[in-house]
Image (cartoon, rainbow, N blue to C red; front, side, top):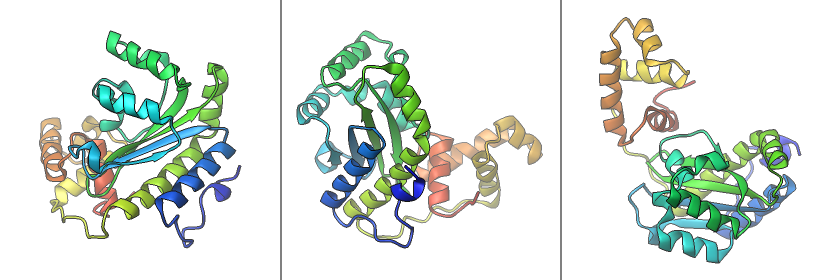
Length: 241
């Protein structure tokens, strides 16, 4: 499947309702050999579940079990997504503690063995996950398909997040975040993949000074990591790649 068939042209209309988005994603994911997905999005990390958008074709019983047991608290996939923007492929190695292994075994009862999860980070601190399941017990086949289709899946993630924000969040300008010239410079280099040591050399300052500025940057955005700050800065067009 070509990228053009996954994502409509940017001038085209996005899915207009939750039902439209649900049907669109089911069709596109199944065309890519993925059987089920679940999108979850909250206004912010501390919002309660009652205000969370949940969309997909996951088994309802599994969703109830997951929420009532509070599995998000121990789920290594959920923990990864809290502080990362890169996707995580479900592997046995992720599940280390007895509680995590129990979660993994429970998920297997619902054929949720292989898949990939994308973190969803919105421009105003919205947070969520997009879980995509491939229904097979052949690990090599699953990992091959996931890696081959990562580009198309990433494009669908972007569309799903953009549409979900439109559906659940009233159109409004994000709160203005005031960054100093130095903070923007450091964020710009970090967004380009530079380490603290590299940034300190480029900007002729100490690593401690770089860390100090990033502490202030994270505080201003209300996030826990540099990656999350970069996502928000890019969304607000405070920096550019």
